[in-house]
Length: 235
Image 1 (cartoon, one colour):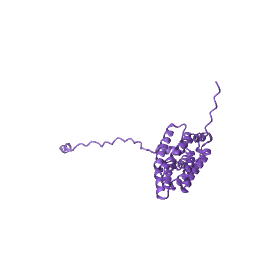
Image 2 (cartoon, helix red, strand yellow):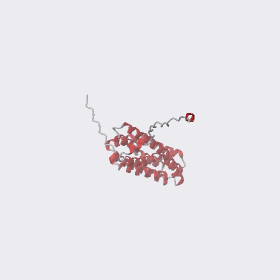
Image 3 (tube, rainbow, N blue to C red):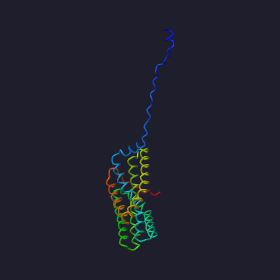
Image 4 (cartoon, rainbow, N blue to C red):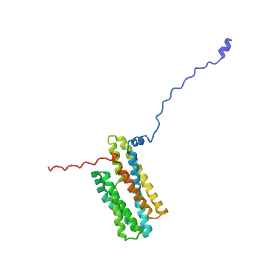
């Protein structure tokens, strides 16, 4: 009996594993959820994206429309180049008016004028107007406001005391710019080739006007008008 007990193996008591530390979940979209939790941000962002998409559509639409109607890519390139030059001159002036009088008071009439320029270009191409009317019409689109800049101004106003949130908002805006400038030309080419040459310009102008009107209607997130600096007194 004693020998039998001595031959039995001695088993150690079971050791309980140490409790594992809970790892923090990786949430890549948490910062973006935080900025869009602020009331009004989703509304003005959606409207601004609608207005920003035509920025990548109108130039390629004009080229395809003019080249398809007049049979000259040289003329189409010259017209769009004139429009870009006019935008470089009128852009800072429009931005200054936005800062002085507010986004809604400036962006809506500026966009209306730009939309009329796009429609005038469409009609001039469709009815075979003289070439100089194409240059004049497309130059009128230079008053198109910088929709991306206005959206960034709203983020900067909402998160003026939160640098981390501003950084997240700027990252989102950069991604939105890239997305619009990638999808815009594709959509314009599809419309002009699948439907009719004027379709890209017509849809782009409609999206621009609708988006800016919806964006301007979001008044509670609009930044205040910048105060004018007083003139320095003479030395």
